[in-house]
Length: 460
Image 1: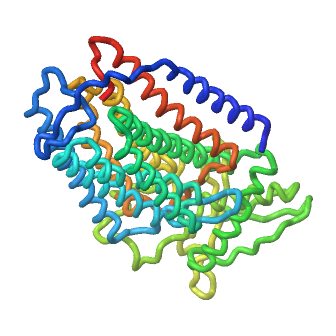
Image 2: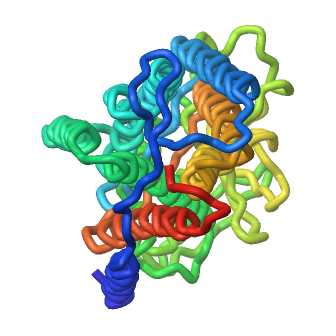
């Protein structure tokens, strides 16, 4: 726990408290008259929309439904029969690595729950009854956040308890609060999870990019390199079990030892000045050598030229890097086994292809969460604008096909990929929670501000 982290947490808490005081004096004694659901006749969580074109509105709703249903179908197809090894979520503080199976399942359920909420909207419109269905959408967002906090896999019994309490509280407050407090509360808690997903995906992207770049940075602090040592040893064991390369003897040489590497016909000798140098060499091997899938597990009808692959080779700020690769028939021993050799690659070379570079596949998740957040923010601040409502509904046609596309990429279009989760210390987690509250609360505050202006109408 550093002083900088504590100061950031204090600053975000102070900003949240200050924002809370801005609600003092806001009056909601004269809320607008609620519209009625055209099918059920129950009150909704919005007033009448001036110059509303119901035909256009229903067209956008139907488009959102078709896109979410299509995304749900494609997500099930993408995760049903993976054609490659899945992404591994690595926790650097412990060295644990979890497959992305559970995260992918939650994303798939997230798309399904959103489809259900859209169907509920068609029947009930947004209101107290719809909240019982719509909360499933937010529930899966919270489940994704908790899963990432636990290292990419549910590891604690409290996971289910948190979700149960969350659902109960949201339904109770949404049902028993009076208009418009019920609508404001439901919108606020949904925005919290929306902001939380954006922050989480951005942090994971930055953490992964930083770690991949740090593997070749000799100026990195010893502590940061040491955190990844257990990951290196774990991968070496995986490589030995998979048979992709010969067993690697892991030892910690003393200062002054020298390690010989074979580079084609010639050999090079690299001085090891400290265990840190050896560890750095191991880290480069970790990035460069994911286990090669057996031939029987290769995708059918898929040529190497047409399959995007992730960059798991050395790419370290222009530095020339030694990587282990399987050589051709020129390096076959007496037992007809291919020997691993060390080759030198420049920063512009790639042994896996150039179409997909780790962690660029995470940009799909960032784009999806940002589009969804923007749509929700617009319809919250300007709920009586047909343009904002259309943007919100149209966003569903972009967001959830993007999530389905990520599942396809993760299951079919990449080699095995390592994603490095950021540090989830108590102070940093508290700071992120405050940031999500600030984003959601600021959006509601802006909505209340514009609702007091005659040309803007009400919040909902």
